[in-house]
Length: 322
Ligand SMILES: Nc1ncnc2c1ncn2[C@@H]1O[C@H](COP(=O)(O)OP(=O)(O)O)[C@@H](O)[C@H]1O
Ligand SMILES: [Mg+2]
Image 1 (cartoon, helix red, strand yellow):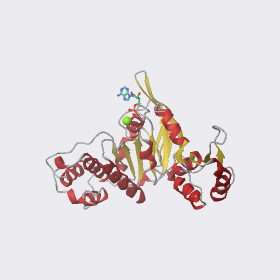
Image 2 (cartoon, helix red, strand yellow):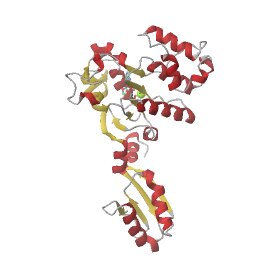
Image 3 (spheres, helix red, strand yellow):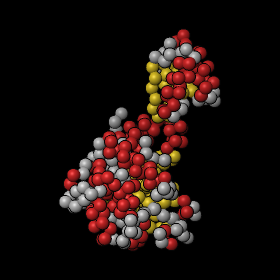
Image 4 (cartoon, helix red, strand yellow):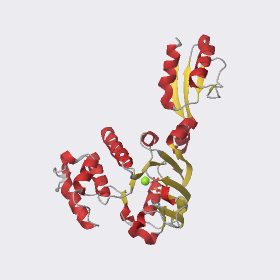
C-alpha cells in the first residue's frame, strides 16, 4: 500500500475517514443531463449502497470516479485526496467491476486470474489463491470458465478486482443477472470484504437488495442525491408497523404497545375510518414480529399486520412504481 493512499492535505478535513466523495458533480451527454450537481460522501470501511432507478446516473457517476469519462464540472475525492481526470494512475488502489467482465472461456478461473495479474502491477505471491477463497471459488478454480454460471463469473470478476488488494471496491450493479442464490453469495462476499476493512461502493436499482447489504445508503434520482445516511437510522426514522385489532381490543392494544415499544409518540392511530382498528407503530419494519408477539402474549390477536417504510414509499415514487 503506497503512502499516496493515506489521507493527505487537501482532503476534506476529515479526509482520513472518507473513502470517496463527489461535490457538485456534473455530466451531460450532448443535451442529456446525467449528473446535475451530485454530492456523495462515502465513509471508509462501510458497504455503501448507491441506489437509484434506471437512468438516475449511477453508471455515469461510477465511470467518472473510475476515470473512464471526464465530468463537465464539480469535484471528486478518492481515499482522502482530490481526484481529477489526470490522477487516473491512482486508481491502482481501487478495484472495480463496471461492465460485464470477459474471461478466456477455455482457461480455468485460476488461470484467468493469473493472466489478469500478469498485465497490471503483479499481485503478491499467493494472492490468486487468497482472492479465490474470498469469493468462494476455490473449489471450482481449476474448472474452465465456460462451465461457470453467471454468478460464478461475476464472483471471478470481483476476485480479479481484488488482486491488487484495493482499499476501495466499486461495483456497478453486481447483482444484475444473478439468481437468488448468486445474490446471497455475492452479498456474503461483499460483507466479508467490508469486515476486513475494504470500503465497498455498490450500485443497485433494487431497494430490498440494498437494504440487505448496505450500512450506508445514498439515493440518487435524475443526477442528484435525494437522501443519504446510515441505513438503520433511515429505516428507524421512516419505518412503520401497522396492526389491526378487533375494535374491542383497541384501547388495550394501544396501552400495551405504549408500554412495550415506548410511549413518546412512537405510535399513532391512522387517520382512516374512525375505529377501524388499525394502529401504526413508528419502528423499523423488521420489528413487525416483535409487535405481533407482544400483542399475542397479552391475548390480543392481530387481524392484520403490515410493515414498510417511507424509504420504500420514497423509492417507489422515484421509480414510478406506485
Ligand atoms: N453514452 C450515453 N450517451 C447518451 N446518453 C447516455 C449515455 N449513457 C447514459 N446516458 C443517459 O444518462 C442518464 C444516466 O444514465 P446512467 O448513468 O446509465 O444511469 P443508471 O446507471 O443509473 O441507470 C440517462 O438518461 C441515460 O439515458
Ligand atoms: Mg447503470
